[in-house]
Image 1 (cartoon, rainbow, N blue to C red):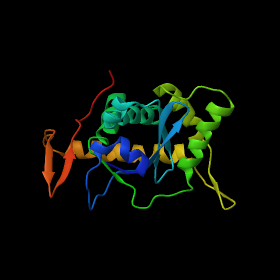
Image 2: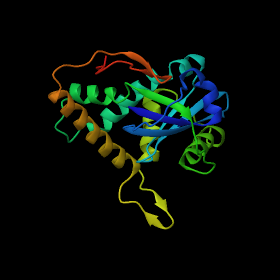
Image 3: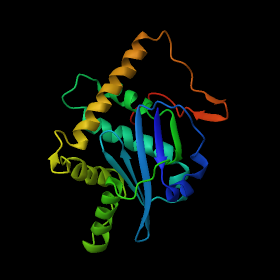
Image 4: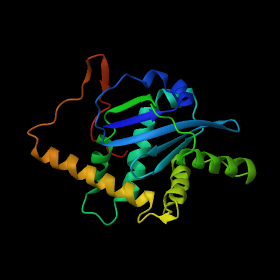
Length: 215
């Protein structure tokens, strides 16, 4: 399960997806913001633990309406590319495990919005890329992943201290641990529960499906 804390600006675009939530323990926690760069609308999402960022540029109304599915597709593709080599997972098992992490996505307004953070820095990089360097924004998934490799592959420096691992390395490790948990639970489960849509205490949980394989 994933939880997203979104800015006020992004909340306008994701309005239908925002639901009241409480007492969640997400596998991955994200913060996300939206920016207008030229004529394109971009969303920058940062995983809180690793500081790994994903960018979604060129979003239109349909993109916002289908954002959970768009995020799922991009997430498992990027994470699979990072995790597949050097592990004992079969590709189908890895894709299924990663995709299942997105089965439940909870979006809510960020309770502690930040004015200065990595999301703003990434947004500024996108602005420089487009406005100053006259380069196209990373619209499609391949270009966005290439941009992500550049910004996530560097070790972060803060207050004169350089981190031991880059955001990409931390994110890869977290994803591998989570997939191992998912597969272990599946091995010990007598049968898989069907996908459901439930409403408990006015909190709506949507299961977008399980173990989707690459097409």
